[in-house]
Length: 207
Image (tube, rainbow, N blue to C red; front, side):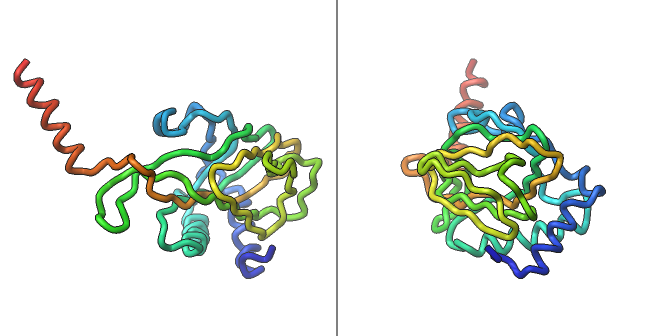
């Protein structure tokens, strides 16, 4: 608890909960996931809203400030974060969080596949009760965690977990994301991709 200075956490919640920020949230479901199923996209049923504050100046400023703080937890690794907004009916079915994403290699700068390594969730909702739903279910231990305001949960990926169905009209806000590590044997360099495009073009010209 008390991960952020209290005034910062209070201010972030007030901004994200304002009616004028609703336009910046987008509904996230399995069918809207970007990427291939082989890399983890669209393999888990879920429903919640995501955003990064885009489209509303103050919410974007707050998100970027919180993102900077979270990225600083493991500055030596690539990371990606979003804001989350759960409303009645939102959930995430049991899953292990394994998924891949391209990032430049920290040493060579070449683009290569990275895999999620550490998951992070910052809770920004006050006075939450178990009966509201939206609980973090740790399927490894069998425990369910009630969101606590200004608290941080982190765990190594893979780990089976879920978010239980929301049963309230109250909104549940988080900042969540992952730190990534290099995926062994999954390098995709820019030069190799360029060479592959040239070979395809040559074959088309020869046809």
